[in-house]
Image 1: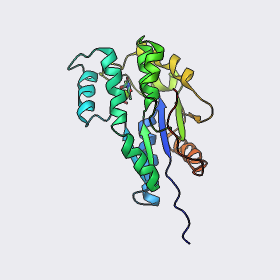
Image 2: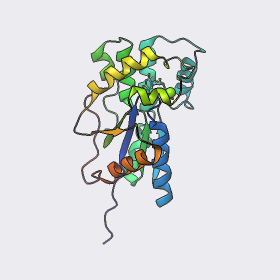
Image 3: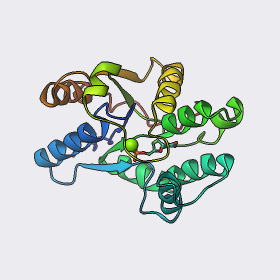
Length: 210
Ligand code: FDM
Ligand code: MG
């Protein structure tokens, strides 16, 4: 009898701007696909190419204004549009690597002052990550990596607020801290070590609370 096929894992990269999470999420997916073609997919949130993501993109580029409550729900809806894709891939044994997820959603909206319980409720039911890799970058190193971009939330004030909120979302049962101050190759190795230690035996779950 053939061995039962192992499920894939859902890994979320979270952290402040310039912590290197996008670069490392891409590197992990590339290295997994080099080992076994088609074994991992990358999903950035927001997905700026979806119909909802296009509106979010326009908001971030300051081309349109949006009510903040609506925007929060649009970020959530953008993730739920990928709900089925994520679950199907995991079931097929394909790893899904996300660049940001609902923790950015909650952190940015709390930083803006939206009501906490309401903010934390709209992503309940999403696929639960096997691991959230929190990219911990020191302010000094982040500053060395260059200035802020021109997008709406790329300001020092917003970053400070998000930096204060993000650690309060931490759940030690599946969050892991990555020291993001190191050079690209060192961080890549640290990420890979965390990846290799994930447990594919335990059943895949949905988020019951955030
Ligand atoms: N962002 C991202 C949110 O405010 N809510 C969310 O749910 C998500 C996923 O959008 F400023 C913010 C975070 C960041 C911007 O930028 C997206 P990047 O650089 O494409 O990740
Ligand atoms: Mg950015």
